[in-house]
Length: 138
Length: 128
Image (cartoon, rainbow over all chains, first blue to last red; front, side, top):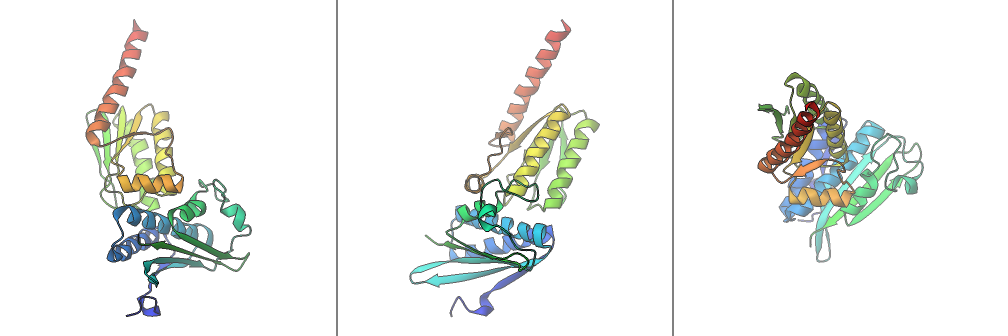
């Protein structure tokens, strides 16, 4: 059974702070099925929490899409955070520690990049944001 | 998820039982700040042993809580941060600076006893 097919995606609509908790719990459960150690489960759940909160805070609504991925010998979890919000005008600035437009600590995006193994961000002003992060099983 | 707040002598103990939403965290912060006055408490113990994630919002809210409690004249200590939660906090860049922490409830109580005794001694010396 290919792990990357569409039907293995777990989609969680995000529009309230309760959805943030739901998404990170689902991410933790999915990662646990692959056998990630507790430390990695906490990192993954924390990263999802930050990404989902950004959706609620900046875009009102969006979704978190979880799936498992295989690349050669490697296996891991992919988290996609997608929204149709206002987008990020300056990605480089948004990835700097301590930068925030909402009065938060400004650690969400740069911190999330440190928590995960791969981090990809696609956003344009007025065109929404798609952030894809991966964690590989070691 | 409402967090029960227990009154234990001159301290308040808030014991997180499950994952908390942002709203739950803010409600808990406000309830503790309020109840410190109601019960004339000297200290607050926030037990986060069961908390699944300590992300930037949780960290900021707990920092704010500690400052607010301080402004109300009491002390706060956070207890029970799990090893994997501590690791993700460091990775995220969260330091929880200026907030007292202790290993568990027992250590937290010992910390508050020490702090409160010091304050009581200072007040007595002033009276003399």
